[in-house]
Image 1 (cartoon, rainbow over the protein chains, first blue to last red):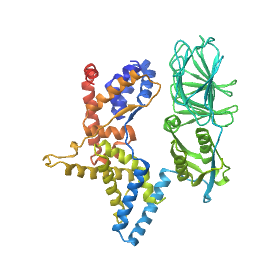
Image 2 (tube, helix red, strand yellow):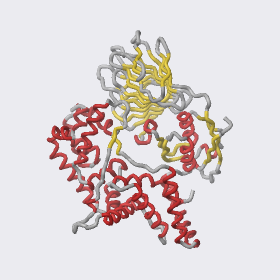
Image 3 (cartoon, chains in turn blue, purple):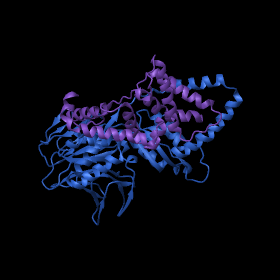
Image 4 (cartoon, rainbow over the protein chains, first blue to last red):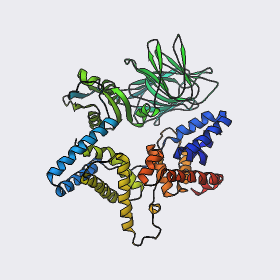
Length: 370
Length: 172
């Protein structure tokens, strides 16, 4: 079966919907009998996961007014003393929930509340595509698409490239993100502050692109032509797979997260094979391998950030890239506060900072002078 | 932030969303959520072990009562089976081509339509929240075995009807 066959198959659909152990066993044994289907099975799973159940939400003001209604009814009914005692109980219970679900400080001293000022970086660039001949500006909702004939489709315009082997450069500035499809059908999600160099068509031997920054990529399967993502420090060789690669120039944390398939990470001296749910950290000449929980690491492209025991400092770096803002110096104490939780990357930065305040115990203030 | 407010803000979106899946009007869901929280505030002691399951279960019971009130004559064999559970799906992917999106959507819609409301309800918790059968049975007030059985029945039913792929695609 190919990917489309799986997606048409009721047994596959019900497996994906129910995640029931019985159907999981069924598919495991199916794959043992049909090992060649493994990659299309994984691809189908990945496509299926894009299905969302429609959800209705209340607006912020509706949520607020409902909450006040609850409280008001309450104060009318109950004498004050009783209420205070009850609130204390909630305080204790809710506090323990806070600890379990949201955050914990790993520093031993009581963390001091501190305020960090947030500054919007005024210089806001557009997404830019530079070909051999010309450069183009892209709106952030445009998706680049390289057609099979080697033309670059910008949605509003089609660029014919005379020199097919030459590399085009896509620059995504801080505060912006985009997606693109390469000539072989591989899909890229490109995070803020990232440069990708790609050809209009690949040569006969391999498929290479260059990346500085962070991408999440679903590589189209092609056994005859390995796919190689090159960065300044290391390369990732791919055989039809999904992974996230983080290689920002001025950041120490260069990492590769493998979601599906097989890849190898290599530099001049060595090559390291990876299997799914492994991440490799690249520090100068050293590769270290760790396990990771997939849900926590590819979330930026879906519009939220999840992190576990992550220093506040690192979270601020990610947010400053995403929103193109800068944060004022933070105190040593708060810098090393480790946070665990989830932040929705809302278009409203204030909402995000509010969540982060709950997570970290640090208050943030927008600096209006900038 | 007040601590009960914290619990409220953490769960309000999920609760509201769940209520609308059960087919109730916006205001009915809001009122029911209000009574759930008022009942918590009225408790002598905060003795809730699993907050999320408790909230879902309470909201479900509130809505069940509303539902009973809304129909004039209750059938003798009334049980929660009668409440609908609707799931609408969409595919969040800008790159995938439209045709494949529509094909996949129709296919999954068809599978979901074949199921009973309670089966869909379990799927909702499995798919969107990744809840265990234990958690789901606590919310829905049924045993772990019956929630499991509902899903196995669903799987069997779909497998039996799997041959009708062609008809499915014509119908929907």
